Image (cartoon, helix red, strand yellow):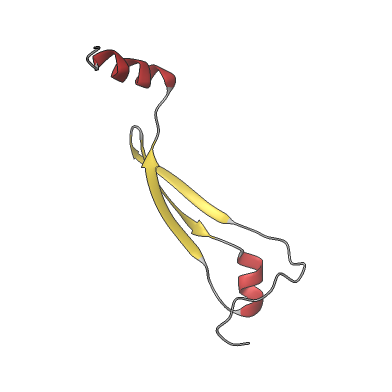
Length: 69
């Protein structure tokens, strides 16, 4: 069927991606999902995302700055 997502046919799932941290605690990531099945049927599924990361020490410092009732 043209235009429909193919049914999983036993092909292994392979995801490729990269994550870059341009500044401390901030990251951007991008990649491709299900590369082998996409190559077999001629389509591409990708993703792009980003976010923040904090350690326990960072959160302890932030929580210390909050006012207490």
